Amino acid sequence: MRTKILTCSLLAAGLLAATSLSARAETPSEATKVPEGASRFLTTPQKVVSEGAATIRGQHIAYQAVTGTLIVHAQGWDDSDTGSKDEKADKKNPDAVASIFYVAYFKKGTHPENRPITFVYNGGPGSSSVWMHMGAFGPHRIVTADDTHTPAAPYHLIDNNDSPLDATDLVFIDAPGTGFGRLVGKDKEKAFYGTDPDAAAFTDFIAQFLTRFNRFNSPKYLFGESYGTTRSAIIANQLASEKGVDLNGVMLLSQILDYDNSIDSVKSNPSVDQPYVLALPSFAATAWYHHKLPNQPKDLKPFLSEVEHFALTDYTSALQDGTSISDEKLEQTAQKLHQYTGLPVEYLKKADLRVSGGEFAKTLLGDDGMDTGRLDSRFSGPSIDPLGQTPDYDPQFAAMQSAYVSAFNDFVRNTLHYGTNPAFEDGYQEYKVNAHSIGKWAFVHKQPGSGRPAKGAPNVLPDLASAMKQNPSLKIMLNQGYYDLGTPFFEGIYEMQHLPIPRKLASNIEFHQYESGHMVYAHAPALAELHDNVVNFINKTHG
Image (cartoon, rainbow, N blue to C red; front, side):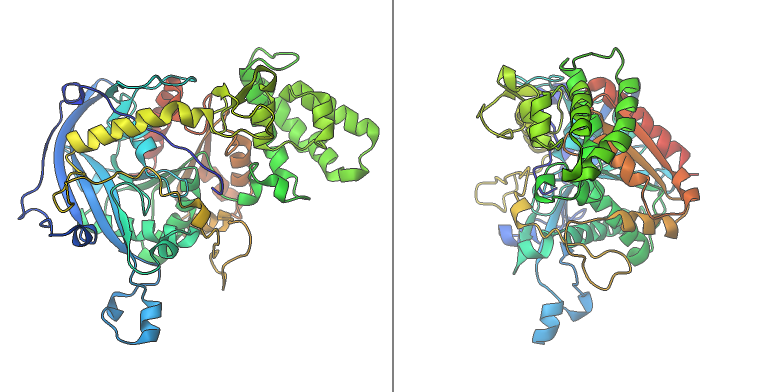
């Protein structure tokens, strides 16, 4: 997304004792020899194999973990032009490459031809998969506090009782420029930091992975979080149209497919009121959670149904009136918004009934000197600037980041035995959690069938629709947290209901909401629900 999008994961002291894992680096006969020099190392596929086990839903699952990199070229590269001296050919054949880092888990004792495989990644754009890996789906996960700041180290890594490894093999992919992967070559950031170049890199990675690991005949799934849902829509279409690969299913977590629906930057797009409508139910859920409503309902879900109806009817009507709204209608709408959000009536009227996500996060608990979290509004933290219009940080991100980063660094180096290669001067490689690429990101997208990239914010609804039309058996699962102010849950529902597809294909989409935030797995009961929904989705979508 254009603003920071989160994800999370963590490690533990005494990890080896807790996880019963053993690892071995492959011998030169089993994998590529480590070349001399870091530059050559970064442009050569790497692989380290380890073995481990975890208890998942009472089942002892032994697995093989493969940790390494694959090399993908920039969009437009053609291997038939390699070594060309023609200047025009060179421009068409960019030399930038990305070494993309991954960690794959394969359950032992299964047959690849009927064992599902799921490719998992976070968003950002420019985020590693450390959050989904260590917090949600990896066989071992970090323990964090539910809705408060997790104390500093030591942290604790446990067997992940809710990993879907019991139903599918897992491949966690770090975005170009993150993890232990690096970008190399001329104009390397331009070659990979953009909506379409990024999706092309992931598409190429997945096709290459299927070949290298002989998984073309396995049931195949995508699982993307946040900006990863944007990426998934494009990948699903490109795999089918460019690689000849049909997917069994696409699982989306905290979706944003049309960036004009973002509640983050809505103030810069006057006359577009839809984001306010779609964010209102998440504002209401947050106010309910923090007991800031004038008349606190007992149950959340019936309350949200009422708010959704108001948002699509009276609230939409009031916003459409613009400055022609009558004094009476303005007052009535502000009073109703006060009942649903807890924000003061005069504040709502001063805001012309339009409050952005950042303004809401700043104002709801402002009298207490606190900001709510953006990605998970159950979290809150002291305001850095009590007089500011929006928060200066995300309390949820601050509450969890250290645990995830510490856990993964310990786990990958000491258990998976990656990140300490002698090709580097002192054997140390930095694991980059984020590429910090948003400021460099080209938010430009060429929709299917279009002759040129569209101007303005990306909208990938046509991409997912194209994938579903080309493969009418493709199933989609949308997962969302009620307390997500970054990608509000009602926005995802609205987008799915406005896919340009035949109505009969709408039955291929299923919806799940959780009493959690953007990273629904940050709340343990929601993680358990997510596991069950994912496993059920996979089991019913392959023969």
